[in-house]
Image (cartoon, rainbow, N blue to C red; front, side):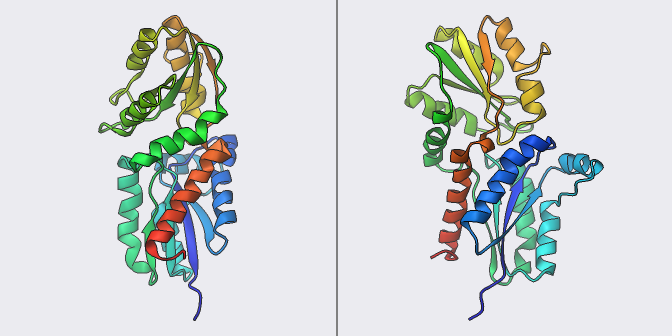
Length: 268
């Protein structure tokens, strides 16, 4: 019985900063290739904006529909798409699931999609277990995470993550960048004030660094989270590494892909 030609597509929103891309997205893809050697691992980006920017710099990255069409042309019959997206939000639904639905008939042995990092109830504690050892807080210091949020509809993942954090009695506060989503920065500041915090470690709850980290989170402009927290009376230090730079977090993608393969019967 012949072994099907199979591919694992690591589908990310994308990032234009070279250092952040290599230390998070590329590192995660390399780990998947190491752990799933029976699959050919390829990458694609779902953000049209990021791909156009990189194309202008001479780096061509496929969209997910383009990558799936190429794999079909190359004779792959079995494909797993493992998204790097943290939440099952708008980008996951509109760019990953929609592309998978369109292409599923192209692969005779099947096409399946792994789940995002924050998907089931158990995932929240799994993320905490993976990332909190990476942060060393000073005495009376509180940890503030900046997530992205959704620009068009509320993403309940971040509020649920905060609930789990509070259930664990941790000095951690979750906020989102998108002004139309919650919990926003004013809500985070109120939480910090209510617990009497004076010192803050500010870090991204984002897979990769880039402008959201260097500009929106830690920039020197008045609008950055760092500046607004300082203006509110807090002493602030920043951690610029994206979540993908931590091996313990990248391992979560291995677990997501493995679960998808087990549920499909492709991995015994």
